[in-house]
Image (cartoon, rainbow, N blue to C red; front, side, top):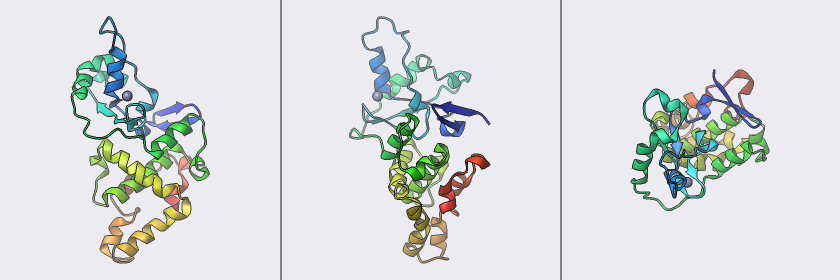
Length: 222
Ligand SMILES: [Zn+2]
C-alpha cells in the first residue's frame, strides 16, 4: 500500500484527497492578482492534500475538490485546472466565514509537531481521525447516512460532532453505544442496533484496520 510521510507522521493514501485536488479558489485568485503573465504557477498548500482539512482558516470558506478526470490529476497542478478554479470562484459562498473545526485544527497542529489530548496523540493519526469523523457522522446525520455520499461540508460537520465526543476520552466513547441504545428503544431494539457504531453503515470505515500494528484504541473502546 502506498504510504505518505509528513514530519513524524506516516499515513496511507486514504488519509489524503486522492485524485481530487482540494483548493481554496480565493487563495488561487490572490496568487494570480497583479501577475504579468497568466502562466505564473498557483500555489497548492500541503495541508489541502489531507482529507480532514475542509476549511481554509484565513478565508473562512470551505475548500473545494476539483478534478480534470485525466491522468494529470495525480500531479495536482493548479495551472492546468485554471478553468475549474475560475468556475469555483463564481459559486456563491452561501455561508458566513467559518473557522476550521477543532478537529481539523488538531490534525494540522499535530502534523506541525504540537501535542493535543494524550489519548488521541497516542494513536495513529489516520486511525484516530477516521474514528472522529465516523462517530461524528453517526451523531450528526444518523445511521442511514452512507459514508460514500458524504459531501465536504458533511465531513466538516462530522468532524465537529465527533471531536465533541472523542475529546472527552475513552470512557465517553465507550459509553456512546449504550447512551444511544437508551435513547432508541433500549439495547436489542432494531433502532438501537442501527445506531451501534459496530453495526451501522459507518462501521466498514471505522473498523477497517490500517495495518495490524497501527490499529488504534478507539475502535476497541466501542
Ligand atoms: Zn483561501
